[in-house]
Amino acid sequence: MATSAYAATVAGEAAAAAASPSRRVLAGGRPPPPCISFLSKSPSWCASISLPPGPRRAAAAAEERVEEEEPTWVELEPIGSEQQLERALAEAQQLGLPIVLLWMASWCRKCIYLKPKLENLAAECYPRIRFYCVDVNAVPQKLVNRAGVTKMPSIQLWSDSQKQAEVIGGHKSWLVIDDVRRMIDQEE
Image 1 (cartoon, rainbow, N blue to C red):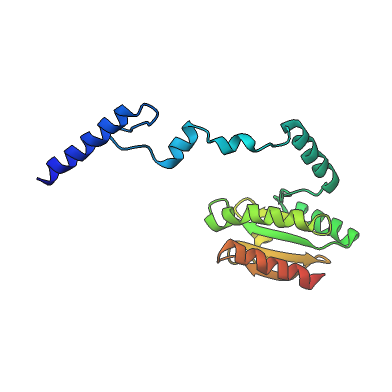
Image 2 (cartoon, rainbow, N blue to C red):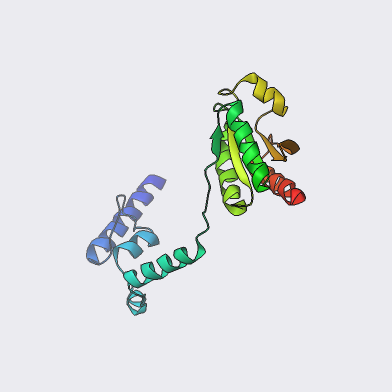
């Protein structure tokens, strides 16, 4: 009995939709949801909105980009050997800059999630701090032992060729980034 009542209702809606040609009906006799009807027919109030032409907005956005000139992210420079690490430490010492080293592995999921967030942080700290990335599987174990890396990801702050502070990134990436920010602020 409930089925016949439903069929009668659907048939009645379909007949009403057929009588009204401006109203669309989906399969099963139902009217479309409001968002589909909104997309299919523009309401009259939309015509009264005036937006500035596209090229002007694009030119204004380009001018803003030229003025700021700060990068939105800085790629972490890879270190693949002891010589590269020594060179980076010596260069930083000459310039009087600290460096941040991300010790990671290509198979480590948390390391992979953390790296882009550190690249954004590197852009915020550019040029007063240099950021580097070390894949522990691509460098000699002697280098990993020298840095005292036991867990990954490990983020270390080095100044004057010495490790000053370390953050182990075993928790959520935004918490790790906050810890790294605090570590950098304490150094400066």
